[in-house]
Image 1 (cartoon, rainbow, N blue to C red):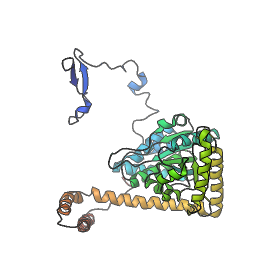
Image 2: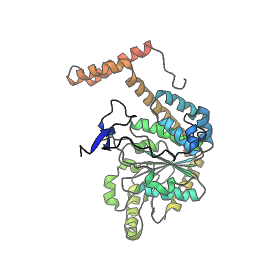
Image 3: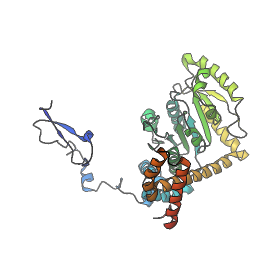
Image 4: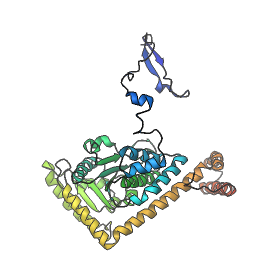
Length: 392
């Protein structure tokens, strides 16, 4: 093998990159043919075909493109929102500020459930039904990356193949990595961009195994919990706190031989709900049957959501919840900004290793360490200029 093949590193590989970029090349081959030659649109080579996809978009390009519902521009605007660059952050906030007047009219639905409950299948069937009825549907996911494995539980749009191909639909996974607060901030802003682009139903999917449900509850109008049959066993894996957030519980896969079990599970969930405080004032949470495969129960679910919106609008709960969402967003932005200011501070970064060593050696307590770092941070901030988030 070693005599037959040699290794070669492509020209674009960084000098300090590891061996994963190395390519095996069979002996006797002097180079690699560019198979794209002759297959590229000549207009792209001379630049005349770039008008539909500019390499760099201005703020006006972002605003105008999103406002007219262009999915390519929307995707690039979301990428701008997701960027961790401070320069991009300021630009993204200015774009978002200009688009805010076009937001606020969409219905925001949160959907959660334990892995394997069939959330993605249900969302696809539900989304297709809404698109058929003339709605424009955006599906977003909130799934903070594991701090241990750096892995994600939720999949991507490939699991909603039919819906993702529809021009009336838009599917976007959450940004990988980062804290829950950071992911939530970006998801909120992504949701607003989708609303500005004309999507009137926003579905936010999350995993029913962590704290992300509470965050999503603070972002949506209606919160749906998707479960399976065998409630006695399934309740073992569903935290009571998650059930307390739900405006409706849907028992999925209620079809075929599973239908009888689903009906039994519905009764069990109904009895369980009696001991749980309603998630929305003036609204009674109930359990329903549905089958994403047979597409049954979806129309009933949409009618329940319509009644929910009508009832909460009349009672004032709808507006109160929307106002609360804005304040939650503001508070999360404050938390994130203060976190970044502290850990990005040059003096704090310089002192951090020394303070950590002191904590580990028992020289100072964690509380003393925090007090010292905050003192250093305060002094340094007082001596420097204050940062304006949204200018330059």
